[in-house]
Amino acid sequence: MASTRGIARPYWVALRFMIAATVVLGVAYPLAVLGIGQLVAPAQANGSMVSVDGEPVGSALLGQSFTDADGNALPEWFQSRPSAAGDGYDAAASSGSNYGPENPDLIAAIEERKAAIAAEDGVDPADIPADALTASASGLDPHISPDYALLQVSRVAEARGLEESRVRDLVDRFTQQPDLGYLGEPTVDVLQLNIALSQLS
Image (cartoon, rainbow, N blue to C red):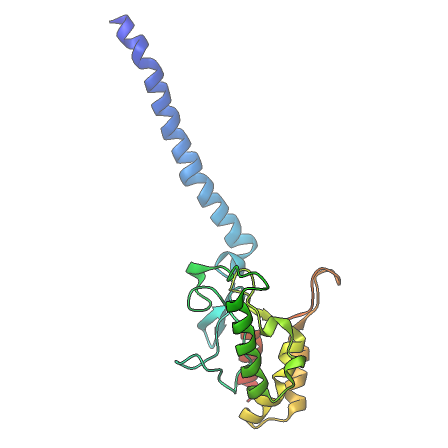
């Protein structure tokens, strides 16, 4: 009998440890982290949602397209950077195209985008910045460069019947400078810019 208890004892100890570890690491710790997140940074903990009149319209962390059902750019909106995530900005399929710089499919896509932007915005193809032609590594980047935003000012202003100077001032207002003044490049959050644009109109 004693030998049976001696054999079972390690299993009983292991079972109690597993139950305790599950409660602490699987329940208490996640709840503690969730609670701290809600107290310290509730907006970020809830996905950095952006709302208009109390209705969520997107996330400040995820890009989205401003196109019609056929994928054509809507002229009254600033356009986002191209996305290779799923059918475009699919958070469940975050990725870049992984094409090398000499890949014929990538070259063809860049040339197609360049021709479309040049026609839509009435600009010289040589003036189109790289972020307007290539997808980011995640495919979910919500930002574009100030150069790409300013390139679109004339089209957006004309489509909305606004003065170009007002739209250009809006781009300047929503241009975010690099962190600490030198980490990264200036960027423009397209969703935030388009929300402000709709309110301006």
